[in-house]
Length: 185
Image (cartoon, rainbow, N blue to C red; front, side):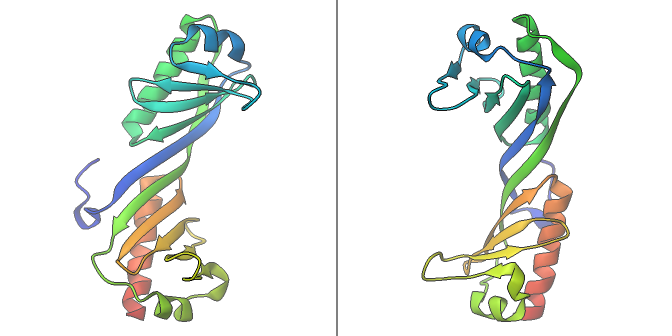
């Protein structure tokens, strides 16, 4: 990832991408010829492919749709998509000319560097967008609407962000949270 400046503690933990690469995929055939691809229809309706380079996991469905997970940056996403399309073509699966696969979720961690008084946060923020039950879970769940991101805030200052579709939305969420927390603390 590039130099993040004020976001230096931001870390992408996982990226999930999904979409279509073909009109159809013969998952029984592909799981038999593609090394690292497994199919167990009794447990799951798709083939699970553990790609080695880049090191990501893919779910392949007979509908031609795929889900990619374990991605850590945009380069890995592009490289993984190019690789699966090439591999499918090599094994005779006709792919669509322009695969329609997009990032559907990013999970990031961030350290604010400051203690967060979760009790103050829950009192101050809109109750409809906050869930906090410390007896059940030590973090506060805060659902933002623009961008549509869910943040888990911990008193240690650590924050987990999920639901973003790009890094800009993650940064917007962090800026929004920093501003809100500054007003509260």
